[in-house]
Image (cartoon, rainbow, N blue to C red; front, side):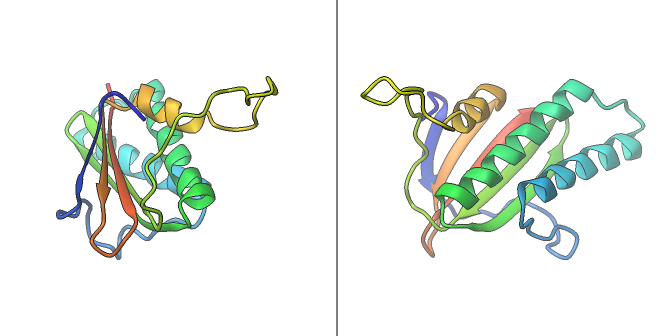
Length: 147
């Protein structure tokens, strides 16, 4: 897990009106939701969007969504909020299992496929929190700087 990662029970909900923010079914939809939220904020505040920072946020959203689908029993909630110079992403899934970093090779020395998403999330996010959900499963909330 990330060194900066904390676990806590999930009580609060982040996000805006669910009608405006439907849950993505695929990582590509999560990427588009992040792009849309950031570009709308940049347009509304008349500030330039940092393309590299947006790319980082899109990658983090894609990795979290992919992991929820592949390893978490499916995506149950997705939130994206632009808060000042940061973007907060929350992804929930059905699994209570904490994310783990896998070694790039197995005990026999063979290269493993995958296993790079969680380290990418930990490297690009400024804050990483994993919360147990009262109904089961977990929520991973990250803050990615946009500057």
